[in-house]
Amino acid sequence: VQLQASGGGLVQAGDSLRLSCTTSKSIINIKTMSWYRQAPGKQRELVADISTRDITNHADSVKGRFTIFGDKAKNTVYLQMNTLKPEDTAVYYCYVGSIDPWSGRKSDYWGQGTLVTVSS
Image 1 (cartoon, rainbow, N blue to C red):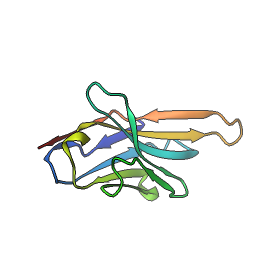
Image 2 (image 1 turned 135 degrees about the vertical axis):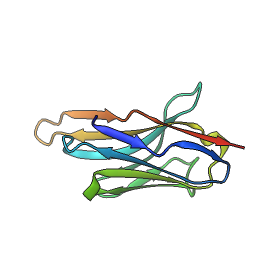
Image 3 (image 1 turned 45 degrees about the vertical axis):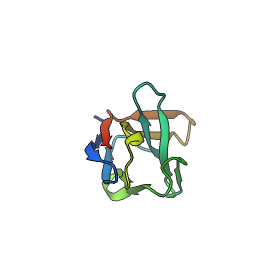
C-alpha cells in the first residue's frame, strides 16, 4: 500500500476530525499532496492541497474550517477538519502527485478513501 489514509468516522455537526495519510517511502519526487472528497451522487472534488514548499490551497467551501498540513519527517499529510457540517459527509481520498525531474513523467497515487459522516 503506497498511501494509507485514516481518521474518518461518524461525528455530529460542529465536531472536529483529523485525517492522516502516510505515503510509502517508495514514492519520490513528490510535488503535491492533496485531499479530495466524493459525496454520494457527486463528483470527486478537491478539498485542499499542499506543495513541497508548504504552499496550501483550500476549497472555498472549507476555508476557515479545514487546514491541510504535512509532516515531512513522517511522510504524512493531515487534514484538520473543524466545525464539521452535514454537507461535509463524503469519502475522503488522499492524493500524491510526483514528477520525475529527468523525464518529466508524472505519476498519480491515490489512497483507499476514508468515510466521514457528519450528522445534524
